[in-house]
Image 1 (tube, rainbow, N blue to C red):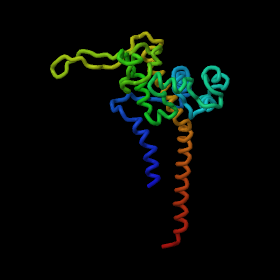
Image 2 (spheres, rainbow, N blue to C red):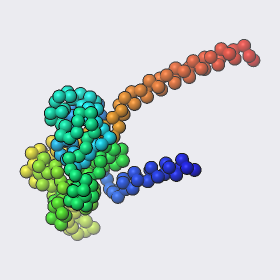
Image 3 (cartoon, rainbow, N blue to C red):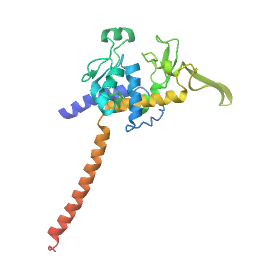
Image 4 (cartoon, helix red, strand yellow):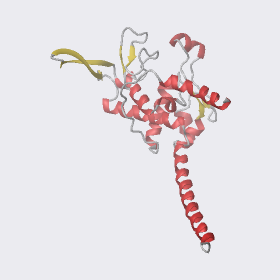
Length: 243
């Protein structure tokens, strides 16, 4: 009973955090074996996200080793806080961020395991201009989001688009999506790829050993199959003379 209550207590926060949006999500076709994508995602995270969002459960040195980033280059271009062997802590003061944003920005080490890759990929591409919000933006996936659109310089200013369409025999304004104004440094296709790279990196940080675990799984299954065959042959040998 105690174990059940403990498991329930650990599960409930994740369920509550993942709840709140039940609409369709875009598929994040990420590839954890694509080191170039992971490196680009790491660069985006360090430059645009780490100022507010820590990754306190992963070390810089681990990221550099896993993503084949030379230690010296990683320290020069990607490490803005702490020591090489230290954890990725944000540069912002916790009390100040709580005052500015209403709460301290959450640690994102495990966000992909809680939210899922599709949610993150869709969320990053769902900001739109909204003058009624404190930072002038809102988000289709996370309504009344409390953070600014820090990637706006890459995407440009995104806006909700409505078109006149025939609905039930009459013309109505129908929401058709979000489109940027074209003033960003990236094209829509480049921005989508950048967000996929960032999503890929967040999935990696949630479970850095996942590819190794999967590789080891094949060996374990192969061993069990061989062991099963040997067990069957041994059983036949023991029972061969018994009728």
